Length: 305
Image (tube, rainbow, N blue to C red; front, side, top):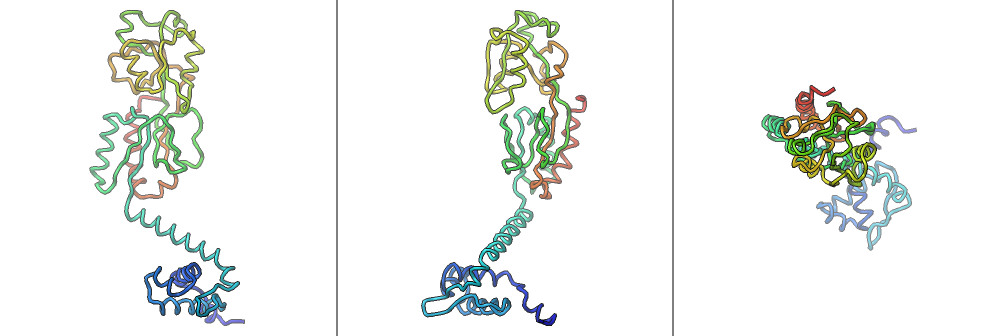
C-alpha cells in the first residue's frame, strides 16, 4: 500500500499537464505539440514525463518518428477530453460574468411603450455597464434554448417549469370600435347584438388563434371583413373604422379614438408574465435588472386583476 504522502504526490494538480497530453496525442510529436501550445519542445516533453510519473503509467511510445499513444493513453483520452470541455465551459462562464453581455428582452412590440421605455432608461442610467437588447415580435422565442434572456408574455397555458416566472397581471380583452365606425354604424350593446356589424381579425400560423376562434364562434364568417397577420395592422384597421375587433384593454386605455363595446370577455383573459431563463438568471446583471424592472413594470398594470 502507498503511504499518504505518496498518494498525495500521485494526484494531478496541473491542468496544463492534461492539455499537453492532449496536444501530443493529437499532434503525434512533442515538436508539433510545442508549436500548438506555444511552448518549448523540452518543456512539452518534460510535462509528459511528469504526467506519466504522477499516473504511474506509460502514455507514449517514443521513437524517431514521434510519440505514439499506448493503450493506457487511449483508455484515458475520453476522460481527458471531458476535463478539457469542463475547463472550456468554466472559462466561458467566468468570462461572461466578468464581461456582462447584453440582456435580451423579447415581447410584443406594444409592450415597449413609452412608459416601459422610461423604466429601461432609468435602469441603464443607473447601470451604464449593462446593455439592453430588445427583440420585439409576436413569435414566442425559446428562453430555454437561449434565444432570449427575458420574455414579457401573455399566455393562456402554464409556462415551462424550468423558467423563473413572475406574474404581472391578468390581461383582459374586449370588443372595440372606433368613433368613426360608431358614427356610421353604431356599436353593439352586448355580445348578443353582433349581427349586422363588420369585424376585423388577426390570425397567423405561429401564434395562438384563440381570439380569431372566439370571433368565428360568435359571428357569421361573412361578417369578418378583413384578416391580418400583423397585430399592429389589425389595430390600425379598427382605429380607422374598418370594423370591430378584439383588443387588450390595457394596451388601448389611452387611445381616445376607440370605444369599448362590451364587458371584458372572460374566456379570452390571459396571464401576463415576466419569464426569465435560469441560465440567464445566474448573471448578476440579469438579477439586478429583474429586481429593478419587475416591480416598476408591475405597477403599470396595477388596475388589472
